[in-house]
Image (tube, rainbow, N blue to C red):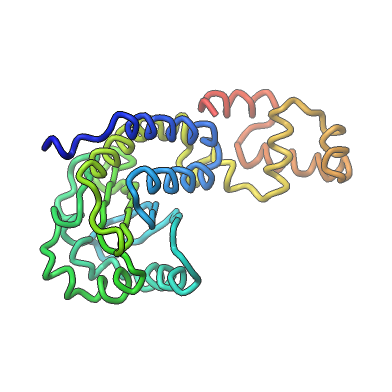
Length: 262
């Protein structure tokens, strides 16, 4: 790594502070992913941050799931991103095709100019219909395989720089790779994986409120008074919470979530 690529110590500290903040939200995958995207974008000077799970990259059944987006400026840009997902536009993106080719290592982090030649990139439909249309330019992608099998999904984050801000600093790639490397060891432990059994972010709002108060030691009667609903309704939500987490008592619920360090 060149000397200019070395990050400032204060930025490295910001990465670890951000990961600590995400751990505090770790039982809610929507919350910690959104906070992570915004925090990393601020640290490296990105405008748009994207989080997704990519299944079967470069195969006919390739698909994106568990998507979170941050930094789109208006409804037009948000609509473009929605259209991108619906059309699976990544499948003819030259950057995407090159980046995920022979992706054998558990963790890969690459910048735009490491993956695709600038002339090819700027001629592509992907660049002109989506990237340029959103006034975006430089790009860093990082991906980590969520299991040991070759067909395990790739946890992928993409960061884009605003066109008026120019290219990313050389240290940005280092900081993104560092954050993803550290985060990888927390997945399924301090940070729940989206859609997993311990993901409280997937609960309906009222169930989430009941769960929070259960974990705080409140009785069903106290929960009913706090939320302004009947004891019968609270008990119904409690049973749904138990069913969601596959337990049959508050003690087992607490043991399960504490066992995940959440």
